[in-house]
Image 1: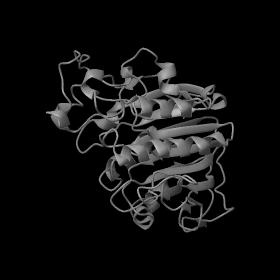
Image 2: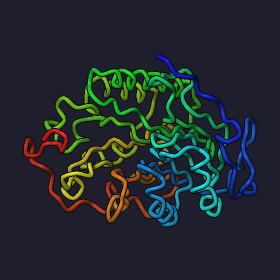
Image 3: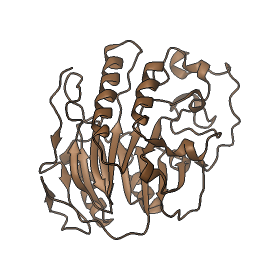
Length: 327
């Protein structure tokens, strides 16, 4: 398994903006963005599938939902480009920002209005393909260690990329196992935890995201004491976070639940609401993923969910629909 090892926060990886410092201040090793005093914390994760393409929708969503911590995946921007595109807008909204990106592909970011400490980009000792990719970012926000992840897709079961995905998940587990006790692991996991998390298990036979080794790797991660907070709160509900752009999959609610928020026991005990913001997937020019929102300590919108607004399409009859790529 090749690739360079991850590096701890350096100048240019973490940017300190908003309440803690002037917009031009930069965070290096040992530098911290001070946490604002809050009574509650709203954490969200969203694969935006290109921050540049999603910019107007992203900013409007931040203003409407007002997360204290927002984890973004597939930003598809190098760090300098991310700053140029979003730096001033995020500073005006009081966010401290850590980003770990590369042009065109991958890219993750953590936006926080409740502190941003001890930023680590990548997975120390993790594999590359062949080089380390911008898929993981961790920081401490309001006393909780937050891991923002864009897990490798795996492409085809048995392929080199599939083996890379499994090795990457094993390396991630080793990092999370080192603590601390209060932790959130969230993002686009590219794994549906169970058959209930896809519209029709029969449609996914032979595909990635649902194979036993992938689910075993996810279960091993959860075996560290992490709770799937959306599924815990809504154990019997149809909940998806991703819908293919093609073949009207969104409007038919033919999706998958692959964007997860996993929380350790001290954090899971604080959950007051956990839901999928399906509204952000609607309309013109959306991402193919919807945000997942989790409220700790207080739920300003109430204990809503599991999907807001709920889909109107009925559940698909098994065997009646094929995936667009299988046609």
